[in-house]
Amino acid sequence: MSLLNIRNLTVEFATATGAFKAVDGVDVSVDKGEVLAIVGESGSGKSVSMLAVMGLLPDTATITADEMTFDGRDILRLTPAERRKLIGHEITMIFQEPVASLNPSFTVGFQIEEVLRLNLGMSRRDARARALDLFRSVGIPEPETKLNAYPHQMSGGQCQRVMIAMAIASNPRLLIADEPTTALDVTIQKQILDLLMSLQEDYGMALILITHDMGVVAETADRVVVQYKGRRMEEADVLSLFENPQHPYTRALLAALPENATGDRLPTVSEFLLAEDMK
Amino acid sequence: MTVIVEGRGLTQDYHVPGGLFGRAKTVRAVKGVDFRVERGKTLAIVGESGSGKSTLARIIALIDPQSGGTLSIEGQPVDISRRRPSPELRSKVQMVFQNPYGSLNPRQKVGDVLMEPLVINTSIPASERRERAEAMLKRVGLAPEHFNRYPHMFSGGQRQRIAIARALMLNPQLLVLDEPVSALDLSVQAQVLNLLADLQDEFNLTYVFVSHDLSVVRYIADDVMVISKGVAVEQGTREALFANPQDAYTRQLFAATPVTDVEAIRARVARRKQARAAAAV
Image (cartoon, rainbow over all chains, first blue to last red; front, side):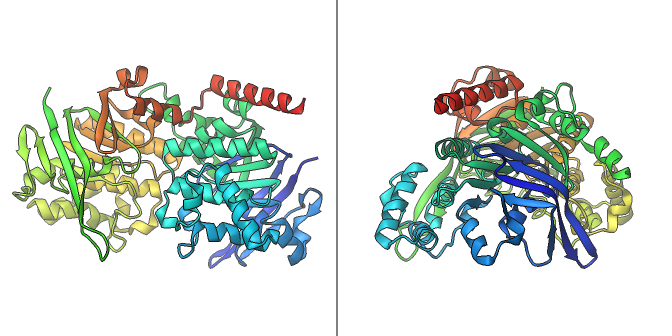
């Protein structure tokens, strides 16, 4: 049985010009210990569907789904107390801008200990010790000193490691990473992806990776969902997707990768987009 | 072949003034860089954040004066700290920035964006300015009716087309492009890269292309310079550099770049299966 199961999810935003459908009948499921990549360009609704799971969408959003369950529990019908137990505990999330995700006024140590004290009910002393452990396991150099550092005193890569440490503090069963390496340099990106993959294996947690980068997909995913304009275009295991893409949009995306260029010019996705917009 | 732009021992120092507690210090962001680019060619400058690649781009684009070394445009040494560049010189070198949301004035209509370089640097009459701007809009894949619209009415890719059009209004020899496609979606990135390739062929343009993305560089560059901490650690033709990288940092950069090659994915999937089977035992 899959860990997270979403069927026919639709998210609509009430805007000044009427309802806007950001996600349109999307199915997502992820198994225990699986790495699922949701890939799409801006406006594809790839983040919105996961924010709906986390309950992080604004009041203007209307969420409907035939099914939205985590380990058999219906996410849409949880009481607030049950929701607090699930979100941030069993399902955690990290975001694109690590530096912006942290509070600039507090040390990173204070912020991670806050998670441990409030969420897991640890004492200050236990939280300190566990924070140190977590910092070690995400590979932050000089962890004792770094606990007392403020976010601005750390690099972007280190801030993302702090975010990851917070996210894995409660041994979650599902970690959702929304463009975790987009703001980072390529060598740092590699380190962070390697870290996520090794943590995923060690902890046996499922990982949903939201990204626009086909390279990141190729290096991490077991299974891939391709989204475009709020709809699912294709779902396949990673090898089939790259070897034998079924949907014309996926084919167009892969052909537009500069490394796949065969001639003088790159094929563009626009021909496909034009045909699609006519419908 | 004519050399359009050449740098010899270029350095850039930034003076960080001392605050209440700290002492003033000098940071050398670019530490003596040499390069030359011939007409119609593309030099890609590759590096990570803090490498000095944008600092170097700003020197080449005549925005910031270098602290040391010589910069020559078409064989003439240029030092803008001594003399303001003439309109002719400004016309030769133009720049396109990374973020098309920040590089266009939100209160300026697209037509005015395109005509401004002509107003400042030439004495072309108003009617002809308008004609040229409309022609340029068409050339970069937009339409003359976009002339009276504001930047917010355009998508990121369209805005980058506008920024490229503005840079081309003065018929430059050299275009300095600082991460021109890194803010764009993959499908839009392909369109803008194609446009740049078309324009280079048509106007025999010379590009200095700053990027952190090796797959883009491999696609567009003739020559590549890898820069790290202000030092050009490796320089060479695209073929030589990608076939046989010499420097340790270049190799590290290559190793970190994700590959979408099917065989590589097959190998990774197999490794993962094995690891899982081993863990299950």
